[in-house]
Image 1 (spheres, rainbow over the protein chains, first blue to last red):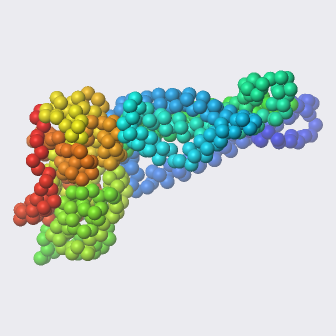
Image 2 (tube, chains in turn orange, purple):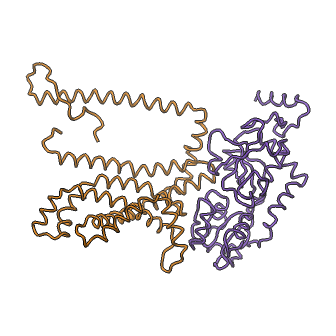
Image 3 (tube, each protein chain N blue to C red):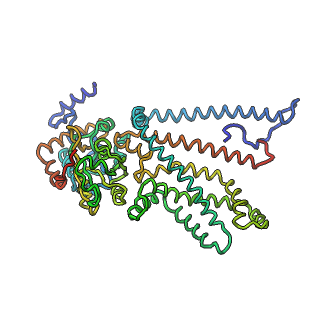
Length: 296
Length: 275
């Protein structure tokens, strides 16, 4: 992400006679403008946050809020529990994400198969994505987490963590399949045609020509889904799984103090902010690599 | 300090009114209320039996509804001068102005909580109890050692959960649910063996809500002080002293015991689980 500096399309204006070359002058000018922009950015940031912080601190109930949300003593007490709960969050997130990437790719491929013989597969894939995307994740969690184990089927696990991960996988696979499909659609038909004309089968042309390009096109939105999933694992607390948010809520309700919620938020941020930065960095790098012949 | 002294003097001078133990006047006109002239009482929705009946706190039925109206009467409010507001448990202790004069919602008095809000004196002594299906291994539990082996569930933020963690200390970490209803679902789904709730709720759940379940037993209380439910006030609300006076009167004249007998008479006689 570029925080400072002039927009990329600024046209330099010639500033009178100079012994230096035009590209050199251009670079000097950009450096000057960049420094000025950085100063302005810093100034406005300082002013903005000063006003916000002043507004918060001058609220008459701030001392109370501080005691209930930002108490050091409570933080120290609740932190180990929240941290242990967050470890469960991380485990669920990693398992779910791996499964989602695989399952959603299968659904997307099913949906993009050409030819009348594949019609039932296409219908299945379309039906799945339409249906599952229409159900709120929370409802899915409640229905699967409490509903399926109640059937008492032999060999079906009843662990809340299992059903929590299952719900996340089912729900997110539907969204991620659409992301993959957009990637597949973004590959020009001529690529597929060219592959077929080289006597590659439909499967081969997908595997060697279409999918590598398709996946590359959608890595930023896939990472975006990653960030979103990382937060949504907190919803599984409703099934009784003791993850970070649930531990914080337990502490809050027993001691009437919300500091644990802030502690949990910090842990989630510690994962999601680097992920978001990485996503931006990756997308930017990708854009630069593809756009050739531009001044960077 | 000076203000407090002044208040005492004024309270002493105002003749013909009953002064509360906090030195404030408890005459109806002098009470500091959220809405003048009306007593605003908070409770959660849904409001469960046997504390409330038909999910309507304003009908005077159910133990807590009856207690609230008895206290209101002592303070000089007729039933139609009482309004109820919905206050979810988690909202009752958040910082900021409260939208109720007091909240009555089976809230147990604990020292940690009392640092954030004010409680009235206790109006009910609580014992925790275990509910389980008659077919479950939990149904034959007689001692704490038996209960230790079970997978237990409780509602978040309840002293029942605290009791599991501090007194029972089961081998498996207890499961925690948003509501008793979710805990019930989990028990029906076979994810837990039993639910720990307060005794009156236990009787209600086993009699009405979960077919084929019963109260396995009640747990011994911790230490010398029994756990008590109290009404919740905004910190430093002077109304508390007046409510405490009213409660004391109801205890002295036997009215509170009568209300308890009327609504919670079933909630006795469960076998005690031996330590």
